[in-house]
Length: 232
Image (cartoon, rainbow, N blue to C red; front, side, top):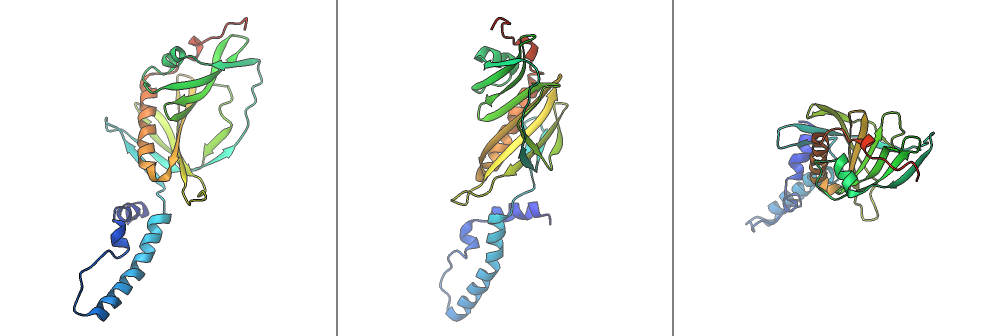
């Protein structure tokens, strides 16, 4: 049996059963106590596995039947150096609707413009709850490198590289899980990220997959159609 399957099975067992639950009284209390002790010894490893083991992959299935597989990876910090004259400004709602026509969620982002042409070459912000980064080919992408075990999927004919990583437990022992999906559309590289409590991993995985599907359905973001007056 694969570890992922075992994890899912154990994860579905109500905690009361893992702890022994309650049982009616029997005529042989000593025999019952001995059996209960054996049950506790058997339950301890199961509880430990349920609480500490984590799946190496998550798979989200969309309404159309397509799937996006997320494989456990990691993250590392990097730096962005733009070696051309540029300026930044917040993008308007109308501009974001032009760039992501199939995304209905409330969005906000900052754009980087090449002052030589006045054209938008990079953006970073949020689409609903998710973080989005997009950049034209040849433009530095992000200051965070997400790598180490991504899985390749096909969504609407577009290759999608997806993965996730978990943070260290906080003071309450809770972890944050970060899902990410990257793909290219018409010379524009995009990455979506969605983070939240690990206990909500299945929901987050599904939400990010649906968002990626909406972005891809809208076609390549028309970065060149968003400009900033050269006089600014």
